[in-house]
Image: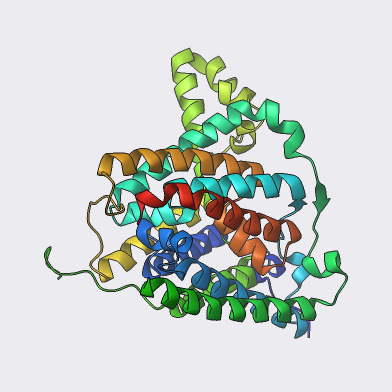
Length: 197
Length: 186
């Protein structure tokens, strides 16, 4: 059977169909973020202080489910993974950027997606974070000439973990599932321990 | 209809919400061949705002064609010469997130103007830190070419090497600072 997914690419969707789908997917994204409690900074802060590991559980449940779906559908020949956009790897900017992003996350207790949901439900600190984020983008842009060199370092192109580690993708998928399950179990133990204190 | 004094509904079980989010992400891969994103739309809004402010201060069509934003090699990428700068996949997704979050919050009785903060801090302090956190996060997200949605969630599911490096670095950054920020939340 020929792969029929990604549907929009195989069947060459026009811009209006893609835009409508973007709104629909965004709706689901925002809906589940809010239901998970991510429109509330107190839920997100729980990750750092151990009173609520919803961030780790929700994120890894979503990653594991979509990863298994993605690689499973590829194995079945339904989906052509080559046509799926994969973030290019720029190792050093991603490590440094990630660390800085983590600092900002811990100071502001939102990330861009969750702050949109916080704004949608009237959280004033969500507006403050998103406003700061917009200001930060402007500051970044004006300092970009200084950062441009570093921004381009460590460019490796489309690299997937299985290639980087030299093992079949099924092994990596299985390893991520096992690590996630272990992490879930650990969060429940930690929550109980910290609650007793 | 819910009344003001009624207590908001509890949030969903994390695994249930995670399955919902995972199905949305998988649908995005299967239908569109790409994942989710949030900071891309914000970059477009910020670039356009700088462009418009500078163009109106400069006045005339020359300012429009040669604004400070267009001359900036980063913002110029987000300001197409022709067509609507907001006619973009991630901008449409941004609108969807706004509506989806609102509908979910409304269903749970959680839509109200309030400042979320820890028990030992003030609203004002919380808002100042939220602005500061937003600024710092933006630097990180732009340097890494994405945030928790585009890198950690989407790149994580596709097993992109750099996205996993990003994700681990985010947790490292968060935990590195958590002790110093503890009075804000505990």
